[in-house]
Length: 194
Image (cartoon, rainbow, N blue to C red; front, side, top):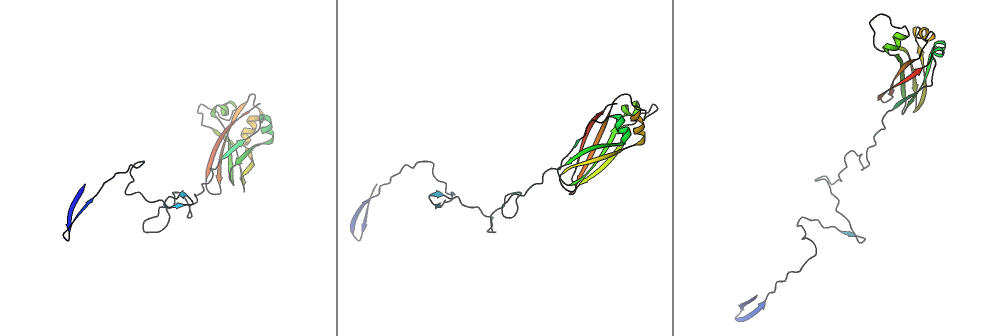
């Protein structure tokens, strides 16, 4: 458009031309931050905590930005051979291997179901109780590894195992506790042949 004006009595004529230039991409947001260039690559701005001047720490991390290590879960497992009834009656012990993932102790109980206890003559009468404990043992470890737990069997079980004419099942219940106070349990069934 053209405008006419006067300055000190001298007529002046000038023209203002408005031109819109096409730009590639969407218009920039007025709140967008400028990304400085370093070595030809854009460097994003580093956020800071308001009023502190310190970089924010990610959740679950130690001072310095390193993630906090989480301890491995405490685990226990059992392994045992194939004992025979007469061998248990003669020795009076049952060897069980208890594997711990950390230093701690392992307590193992040997139990019989109510049905097997009745068949072996350990329970008499019409009233049948629950599982019966026939042996127990304990071992400790100062580091992760495997300990041999020697269960001492009760005299009544040894007498019943000596006269057994058929096999039965022993239930092994293990409770392990680490030095840090974490506990774990496991159960295993073994078949004892006559």
